[in-house]
Image (cartoon, rainbow, N blue to C red):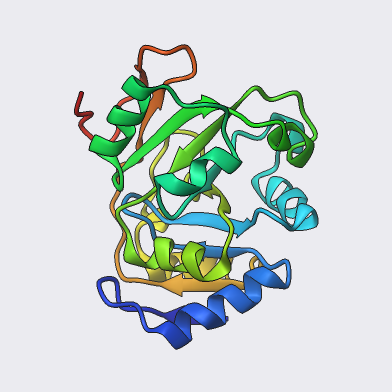
Length: 204
C-alpha cells in the first residue's frame, strides 16, 4: 500500500491510516529530514524482529534508533540526561541528528541484547513527527540505505515503491528525500563526539 502525504502539511486522515498499520504490527517506509527510513512501532516486538530480518541482521546486532516527537518523551527511553547534554539536544533538535544516549532498562529487552545506549532522533519532518505523535510511542527506525552508502532508491519515492512495495506493509510517499544521512553524535560519555558527519552541523 502506498499513501501520499504532503511534506509540510500532513493530512490527519492519512496519518491515522499510517498509524493504523503500525498499531497492527506493520512495517512502513517513510520520509525523514534526511533519507527515507524503515519504521515500526516500539511496542510490537515481532515487528522489530521483522525489521531486523528485512535488514538481514540479527536483532541483538541491530543499531536501530528511536524516532521521538520531542524532548519531553526521552526520559522513558534514556537514563538521566545532564544539563550540558540537554542544552545540546535542545539547540539541535528537531534536526538531522542521531544522538546516542545512555539507554533505560527497557531497551535491552526490546532488542534482545545488553545494549547500554540508544540512538534518538527527533527529525525536522512534520510527517515523521506527526506519525509518532498520533501513535503515542516512538518509531523504531533504520535508514533505507545500506551502511553508509546512499543510493538512488533511498531518495526517489518511485524507486522505493518499485523495490520495496512487496516487502513492507505501507510506503509513505512524501516526495523526494535528501541523499545525506543524519549526523551521529555520541553523548553517552558526557562530552559530545561526532561519530559520523552527515547533513547536520552541530551547534554547541
